[in-house]
Image (tube, rainbow, N blue to C red; front, side, top):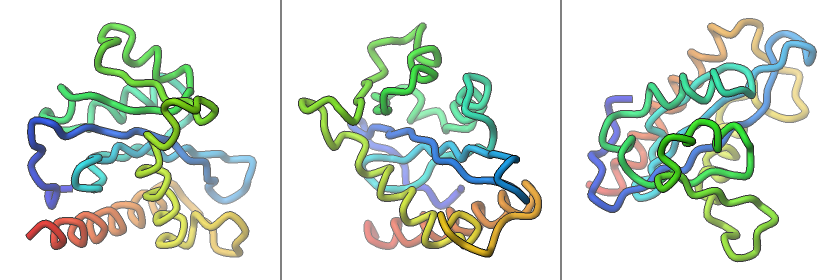
Length: 155
């Protein structure tokens, strides 16, 4: 993800996860995404379970400048555990909260673009990933092109 633009002092992250499967719906996989709020670029993603270990692996992939800024997430309790030692950095925005409504909408838009751009992720589709390796490769390709397109908008 070397096409990401450098963050400015007020750049923030929005983190979310989305469900998919590999080979059959019994083999669930969660795609964790960290998105720069300013540039709308995906700065990190991780395939795993919907648990703290996967959230930590995503966080380890986030480049240093973004690791210091404010992070917006939905109401998943895993995020509270992830930011337990740095609660002022975490801004929890549950979808039902009317005051903070829309704070995570940019990452929801990116998730929608992922679903449209990677055929494996379509909700009702005959195409599906036959291995985690190929799902990861397709996501890497998509993220590369997504980030380049977002960078072109700023140049």
